[in-house]
Image (cartoon, rainbow, N blue to C red; front, side, top):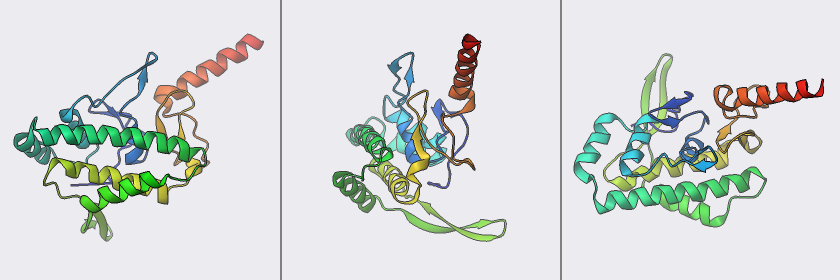
Length: 208
């Protein structure tokens, strides 16, 4: 099962957005706003599994096995609730952190607890020039889905340049700016970038 290294740059996949260049931020982006209303892309446990598949964190065979074994069980519902609660806690934390505040101790404690209960493992992977290391997560129970989310959030807060983590100037989606100049302002050119350019052009024409 792939983890943080497997982050898609596609605009949308499986009905979800993958444009943040960082897994934890992509997870935050599962609750966008459309026509002024919040749009929940994770309405149930099945949607959680589909997001993990779309993010290439969960193979389709593993997702099918989880569905067969756990289905609509109480543990699946608990994992669904815990995942969304973690998402909203991280959303508040990321907004505060982007503004320059330190990560709250309660968030650190929760991430440490989740990583201890659902630890990442390391394995070797053959690549073109030899070998590389990658993290992976052994799926044995629904709650293990929380492990990759916690690990990616820890990576976000520790390894990424806070000044390049920001919310789109036009919408609510977050992203990690990997551009050379670090001046990216919108979630994507196809979605908000074009709208901002059109608005700027219209404003210039009004002044003429």
